[in-house]
Image (cartoon, rainbow, N blue to C red; front, side, top):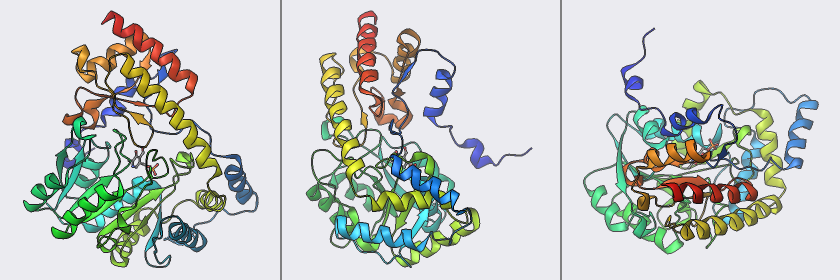
Amino acid sequence: MKVSKKVQELAPSGIRAFFDLVLGMPDVISLGVGEPDFVTPWHIREKAIYSLEKGYTSYTSNKGMPELRKAIAHFLEKRYGLSYDPEEEILITVGVSEALDLAFRAILDPGDKILIPEPSYVSYGPVVDLAGGKPVYLKTHVDNGFKIAPRQLAETARKGALGLLLNYPANPTGASYTKSELQELANVCVKNDLMVVSDEIYDELTYDFDHTPLATLKGMKNRVVYLNGFSKAYAMTGFRLGWACGPAAVIAAMTKIHQYTMLCASITGQMAALEALKSGFKDVVEMKREYMRRRRFMVESLNELGMTCHNPEGAFYVFPSIQSTGLSSLDFAKKLLQKQRVALVPGVAFGPSAEGFVRMSYASAYENLKEAIVRIKNFLKDT
Ligand SMILES: Cc1ncc(COP(=O)(O)O)c(C=O)c1O
């Protein structure tokens, strides 16, 4: 059967290709996957179960349940002073993954350029590409904490681009931006008339300063599509629930595509999400405290082993250098897996700027992390 040229040309995810090697291997400590090791808090699961018992098994409104959209609007107002109309400016999606796809299909015409800081989350380039756009990568460097510099953004934007895809805290580097750093980027966006799709899915996992949504900054609300969801903060990856907020015209365009392709997000997930928002921050705060403890352990241990590791400001990944080993990131990852049964992701999966680095997720039990460090130490001794 025929497969489109575009899809044939699309490179498979570097993460998937590597993790096919892990399948079926015994005694592996996996620091590879980007999802919380916590189970969704019980009261949220209970609400989902209860909704099924009560017979909530239907479709919902295409945009998502009105109560959930209102709860998100209320939450954003209270948390960040960010106001969106739940009728026209909020769409409930099947995770931030669907929201990314919808956002680019809604705004791009063929060949429109989208600037993407790199190393980047593996989906970004392909999603822009599949929507007919052209990803243009902005290289970042460890010396600058893997952040884009305003001047770099301005120089590239001047060559012509429709928009920027910003993700902070970032997967895979953990880099984030303070309010003043963001304001400088925002000024460049306004000056160069850039739209921004802002993936802030790790906002609650910001450790060293308060998270600032880009849309709260001067001149930004009308040019930002703000994406967030329940997967990371509430350990709800399997519920597949996210949301998009933005100017009414863009949300209407996204809703049009969503209603033909997805119809709506699952009602069980929406019921669970409603409970998550109602319950406040207790669960989030507890998980965050544990992630911070693990971050400290990983950063200190890796630096002691000579794998230079900057302090990630958010998310749940460390991104140490492996340059002292002289191995490529793929060889390092393959050899570590074969010899010591530790799985991590080779940096090159996130773009060429990430060669010489590896990504390890610390969304794994503290005891696993300790054992992984022992194994890595043994590996480095033999390398
Ligand atoms: C930066 C980033 N955006 C989006 C996603 C996908 O999130 P969701 O589960 O809401 O689809 C991930 C998942 O790893 C991610 O790291």
